[in-house]
Image 1 (cartoon, rainbow, N blue to C red):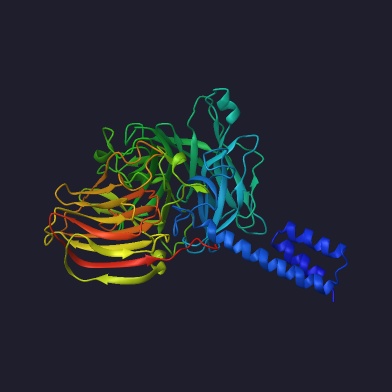
Image 2: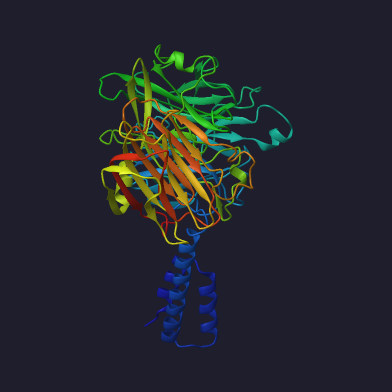
Length: 561
């Protein structure tokens, strides 16, 4: 029996040049075929074991998130091209495969069936003669308006910004233009359109980027939201190729402390009502109230040409005021998934979990940056206006393990909620309902600590009616003077005496969702030894717990690359 073809098939499947070299040596030395088979099978097992060990080690580096998306290695920033197709959520992202700092941008790519367990795929889009591949979106062209589809199946179409570095080096303003690419194999390979760019730069605009595209059925056209310096432009096309300018929005509204980026325009129903509104998300850098980059949004109507603010929302975003999606310093470039099935019905969003104030300097080595937890956003009528609420997706609940409930009643300061052995990432979900009417403390926090006397606190100041995140003593702060100068604050909008809090703690991050997502706060931290304990800290009294639950969150990243 000839075992060599079997061996070759296996060795090629794992891409092992070392194994092939060994095979040639064995053949040259005249070993019998059967012996070659057994020796090479043993070699394959050793290779496979080494590969598994390397894969496991890859996700055990200091600060590596255990249930958040991160690239296997190197640099990432904005999430891009999020689309759902044939049972898979696609997540593309700004990626530089050669270093852990920003560089020539590619589109990294991963897919998931549940938004939590991600399979990394080869790079989707590479830079070319037209420029780097900056941020954008992707859609399913269900009616094949582009003509890119084959065999009666709709293509996936990616819409992105080209950034021409040669023009930037020449100090020309027209560095950015919009382009498209398409896929007919479920996003595994991509072909760039020969007619790119589909929207050339007008010639004088420096910041002209981040196209987010949706299909608008009433006007029978694709609509693009495009970030243009200090405002958003809307463009329309019947086929994703021939675009026409529609209108502009924003120069007189919202925060203008920095450049507008990564817009997202979509319809959404008001919870508990029959009315529908349109939301325009705009990310800005800098300009966030706690410093650096952040995410603001607007509520109004869209008629196929113009986005018009709702009259009740206008006062909230006038005179350089803004309404913020997340008050933490590490939530940016937030955009939503396209083509989520109607039967699902959710508007799903994810953001880059970092801040341009320090993103390129945070103390990670093998990789740098990751994404927030995926969130479901809903629109609510609040008083005379409207507000988005953001909550962790329901799929996260399947990751709970070793859940324990807290007894109802008063808890004094210092109560140990959970702990992990040294060297094991502290990964927990904390759910609390605080009865403020029965609480005698003037404030409280969830307090992370380790044996090195490093600590991080995230909590609520009852007297000031503010949430806070304090990372001044959380570990390594040397990489940026502005990382932890002060505690970061977030207002509470509800007047209810029952304060519900949901907090996710990963190896190097905390995400707070208070009042069912009415206030959100996302922050990074970098303890040099890893946090090992979670305590409840009360200030000047006791905290009354109406209900509470602590769950360990299982890792989703190991062996999924």
